[in-house]
Length: 104
Picture 1 (cartoon, rainbow, N blue to C red):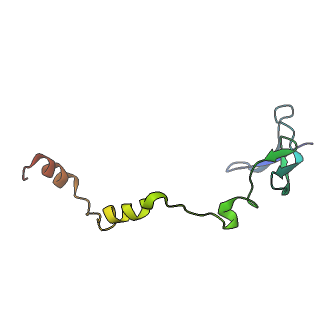
Picture 2 (spheres, one colour):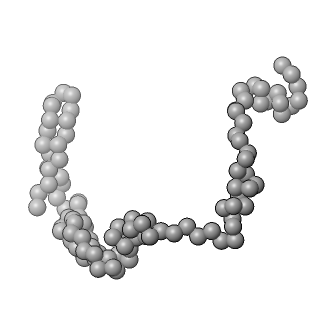
Picture 3 (cartoon, rainbow, N blue to C red):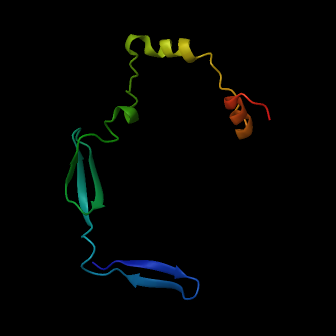
């Protein structure tokens, strides 16, 4: 199979150039099969791929993802850091002066 790509140049306009043969791998139609049984048809340089998880069975995409709070870590973090607000950044000169304890 012969593949072509389009090159656009300022001086010559658009050129249609063929890809060099023998350098590029074969790009064939293939089937991807998930462990859950979902089948996807696509094109790849490899044939008949088998995967362990896909968008049809991944908990994030199916909405079954659960956040588990072990030993109240979220509440502990909220109690410790929840009321702390970020302070505004100082200018570099003011920050340097504050570190040295000098006024400029």
